[in-house]
Image 1: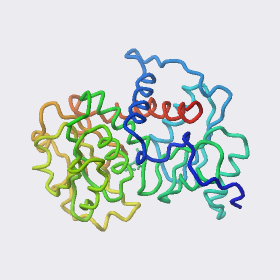
Image 2 (image 1 turned 180 degrees about the horizontal axis):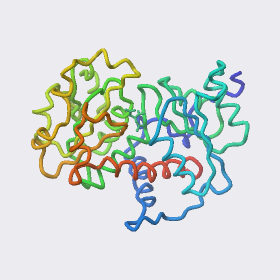
Image 3 (image 1 turned 90 degrees about the horizontal axis):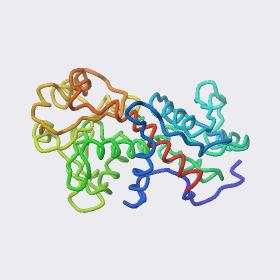
Length: 315
Ligand code: NCD
């Protein structure tokens, strides 16, 4: 039932960091800054989505991304509903694209899509007329997470040109690693991908926008000495990553209290969540008030998603 396939994604879609220019990314970061709550917690009032309905089609589990898109829509004066695979007609065999076409026919203004299929959000965008935002598609990309990660790092460190960020863990299965690496490279940072050879391969160096920008390391202890930030990743067990790790994973790649002593004093720690405490990150590291920016990522996640939704309807 692909009656209305359009073959190019529209400029209002937000499907991947790949293909964005540095200027376009910086515009989104500037827009994100205008959406950050004031210190006293007040949120700038906006009515960009007044009278508009946004559909969150989430065919994979989510807490932060789903709730922050919902919050972002509310903060922009719009209405939002969320459809999960469980409880929808996906369980009766309806395809993602058919589900999306039917929801578009209800008159929604923007669709946010999360799915297990790499390229699934682009498939939906090609079939629909309304703007589509990718909220994570399989192992491909998670562009709003890439945006919020660089927004958090810029806030903590200032300009990212020449900075070095380690991304540690299950890089192979991580759409976050792909989007955040590309965003960091666009902004002139260097990225060190760290993890076991089964989860970090040299082919990932192709994510760089300039030669030498992305390096690969299998030794976390030496990798931490000169970094400005560390982004820890969960093992993506739902993508069968479990068979690629050994029982001493925490000893080799966990961000322990002992390891953060190797970090430069100014270095900050991020994690896209959900965290598996005691596996890739220790409690005391995740909750370290000096270094951890993990909850700040969540706050800036709302501001970033507001920026992407504004771009979708205004341009
Ligand atoms: C990430 C995802 O879903 O890709 N989570 C998120 O969106 N905050 C990372 C993960 O699930 O490990």
